[in-house]
Amino acid sequence: MLSIVPKDIGWIEVICGSMFSGKTEELIRRLRRAQIAKQNVAIFKPVIDDRYSSEHIVSHNECRLPSIAVMSAQEILAKRGEATVIGIDEAQFFGMDLVDVCQKLADMGLRVIVAGLDQDYTGKPFEPIPQLLAVAEYITKTLAICVKCGNPANRTQRLSHDSARVVVGAQNIYEARCRFCHEVYTEEKDSKAQE
Ligand code: ZN
Figure 1 (tube, rainbow, N blue to C red):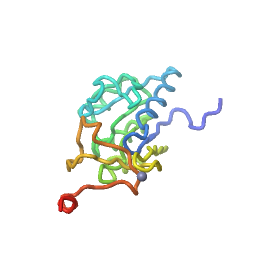
Figure 2 (figure 1 turned 60 degrees about the horizontal axis):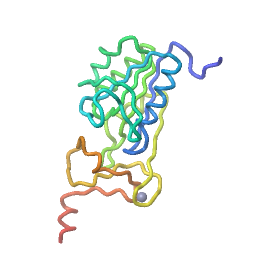
Figure 3 (figure 1 turned 45 degrees about the vertical axis):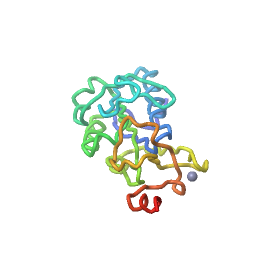
Figure 4 (figure 1 turned 120 degrees about the vertical axis):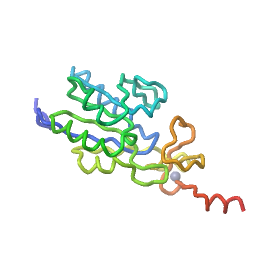
């Protein structure tokens, strides 16, 4: 059978988009296909993401696969075992070290599939996804549907006024919005709203 991608060569696939766009679902779908083909798969997620399950990656529609929780991107290198396919979820929590780690894994001949948020709640590019997009062979951008207007949505709206870049374990304070409906609350804007 003719393969589109030559064998014995590694590569990086990035699946990115806003929250509720189906990134983890798509990651799970690809990893399941590899498992069905009896390929050796290892799945990693950052310890910071403990929603739903600490030993699985779980999409919002409750699909799940067993995963290894790690504190840093470097740990992925140490804990990959014999795997030839590496899945990484919630990539935005690993920081810039993840870029080097993914490059190393792909250079070793492994297939690396990374899913993560490409923008923070203010709509700014969220490292390390922009850098990973630059070095990846394959890119998939998933879109959600804007909760306000029903148009394609690529932004994550934070419904609370918390200004930390990451607010963990607060799934119900986010929703998908399009660029038109997305709003960033600033203190200035808040004080105006109160006037
Ligand atoms: Zn909208």
